Image (cartoon, rainbow, N blue to C red; front, top):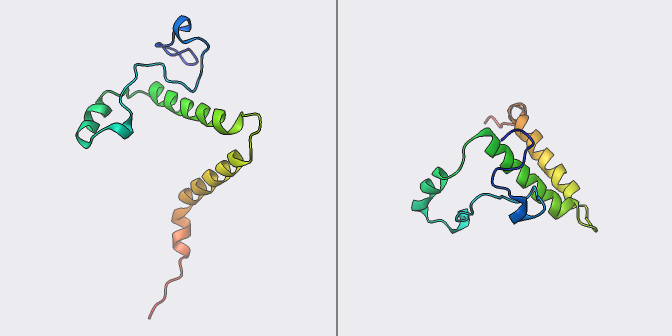
Length: 107
């Protein structure tokens, strides 16, 4: 499987038109339905490769696109989400500088 190819599990005769927001692998138990003792087994069944991680982020991005950005009457929610995410990101990368400017009371 090279960069930019369809997933190995995708079969156009079975699945129809390719949807980048869909996982075409074997369905597994959702994380929300697991018991505490089953979490390690569930994590062991996951693929741990850079391609799998990139595919996860790609599916999450396309699901966000389909839900917020690409409807006919999309609102301003995606703009506020991007602004909020960038605020959190820049706060975290500048936290070391910000914490030095705290006002301490010495008494």
